[in-house]
Amino acid sequence: MSIVDIKIPQVGESISEGVLVEWVVADGDIARIDEPLLILETDKITMTVAAEATGRLKTITLPDEVVLIDQVVGTIDTSAVTDAPQVAAIVAPDAETPAEPAAALEGLSPAVRRLVAEHGLDPSLIEGSGKDGRILKGDVLVFMERGAAPAQETPVPAPAAPKKSPVVPPGERQTRTPMSRLRHRLAERLVEVQQTTAMLTTFNEADMSRVIALRTQYKEGFKEKHGVGLGFMSFFLKATVEALKAVPDVNAWVDGDDIVQNHYYDIGVAVSSEKGLVVPVVRDADTLSFAGVESEIKRLAQSAQDRTLELSDLSGGVFTISNGGIFESLMSTPILNPPQSAILGMHAIKKRPIAIGDEVVVRPMMYLAVSYDHRIVDGKEAVTFLKRIVDCIENPERLMLEV
Image 1 (cartoon, rainbow, N blue to C red):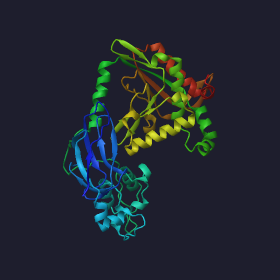
Image 2: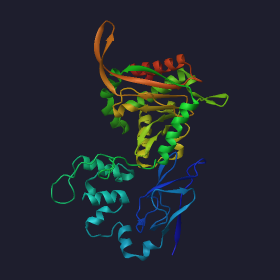
Image 3: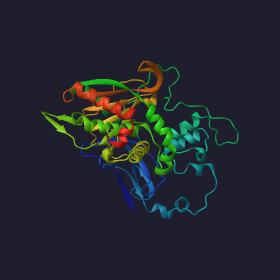
């Protein structure tokens, strides 16, 4: 018998513990090397840990328990893949397995498997958004919300279930659940920002007509050539780089009694994940084309969804862009992402009447907000910075010509 210990991996110098959120492979099932094994949540990142060997899993630590770095949380018996006939049927790709309902549940996480079984759903009909098409819990809930039919032949739609809706016992007026470590750390950082910075916000608005027209004209050819869609974020990210070059005070931060000036452009893009807000970083955005920016944003967003982001994906950003517009937010005051000195808030595009010369016309407008640390960025610089972004968005050819 060959036993391999499953240890909580090192994920960063400042991280000493986390929470084992979920075993992707159930106790007693076969884990496969380099495939998802467990989900670990720390105060900075939620990530999927892959198996280091193929064999039968024996769990030691239960889900939702606090674990230390290098702690042994389970074992993998590598000899089990050869001493059990039923395992060989699972591992060998050419082996024939009975077409039973349980066979359709192979490869699903325990949470997804339970949800699918409870509602009698056919996993083959559910589109997975995880790595390599893996079905996540959210995919099942979305499938149910659309009124998908269960696996039984009776064409009765499954009851709609709002995503993440809590199960409240009858008669209960309140429920209490522990805050996740990621949410707890986020709360600490938000309070810390309010207490340690002199944060102010300036607002402006941008006419999105020309960006929308440009996207409409070239989006099909862009996707055909580059294999990725042309979104609004690439325009704003490139505009942000131009504004940082024009107003370098915004690309700096306070370190004690010193001002640290950045001479690179690693831009964070805030992404709302199932476990909270994360800000993966687009490295050297000034050197990337629009297609390069879109490809990197897509990769990072997918990694956040799959919980495969690494700590290096989240560190070192000099500026952050947050897009509340995807949730139909019309205006907000974004909070700084320390130690950065500024953050841009995008919002929903709404058609509004505006004055152009002596005429009133209806245009697709977006409110923009820049929050900044007044200890290092003066009001003039903040307003100039945001106006530069507006100019680039209203005249997108400036981004192409870099003028």
